[in-house]
Image 1 (tube, rainbow, N blue to C red):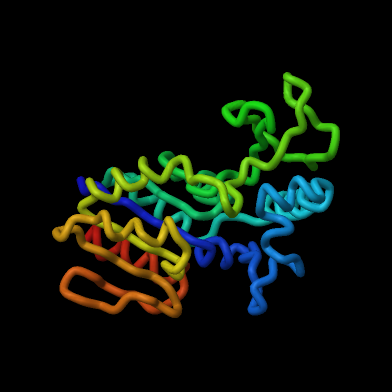
Image 2 (cartoon, rainbow, N blue to C red; image 1 turned 45 degrees about the vertical axis):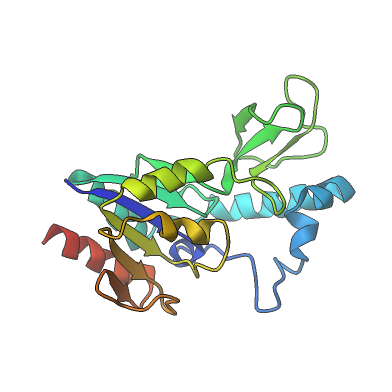
Amino acid sequence: MLKIAVLTGAGVSAESGLKTFRDSNGLWEGHDVMEVASPQGFHKNPALVLDFYNQRRKQLLEVLPNAAHHALADLEKDHEVTIITQNVDDLHERAGSSNVIHLHGELLKVRSTFDESLILDWKQDLNIGDFCEHNHQLRPHIVWFGEAVPLMEVAMDIVARAEVLIIVGTSMQVYPAAGLIQYASYNTSVYFVDPNPSIRSSERVTVFAEKATTGVPKVVAALNS
C-alpha cells in the first residue's frame, strides 16, 4: 500500500463541464477577479459577489464527476490516498474519494462573517440578509485573493510524507499551491497529467501530456501494475 498525495486543479473539473472561471483576458465570467474574489470586492458590492457564487453553485449541481475523479477514487481500494485540491467543487467526494483537502474552500458551504469557524452546508442561493446564528451576514466559504490558505501546512505535511505525488489539471503557476511540489521527498515518484505540462519528464517525473480523463486512468494502471 502506497502513500499517495494527489494535487488537482481546474483541469480535472473542466471535463465535467465546469468552467474554469478565468478566460484568456484574465476575467472571471466577465468580472475582474478582485471584484468577485477578494474581501474588498465583497465589502464594495456584496450582492454582486453573492450572485457570482450563486451561479457557480447552480452549475456545480448540474454536473457529474468524470473518469478522472472516479479513477482517483478507485486508488483508495489499494492505497492510502489524500487528495489536495485547488478546486472548490465536490466532484472528488461525489466520485467516492474519502480524504479530500480543499485548499481554496468549498462552493457548497458558507461561513459567518463574524466567526469564520462557523461553517454551514449550503446548496441554495446565498442572499443579502442570510445571517448566521449571531445575526451576521453569511459569505461563501471560499479563500479569496489576499486571504490566508489555512490548510496549507496540512497539505505540505501530506506531500512531504507521500511516496507518490500525482499532479493533475493544474498549471503549477498559482501560489502557494504550486509550491507544494517542493515539499516532496527526492525519493517521491511524481506523475504529472496536463495537456500543456509545465514540468518535463525526468528520472523521477513521468509526464502524461493529455487530458485528465485519459491520463489519470493511465497513472492508476501504472501504479497498480
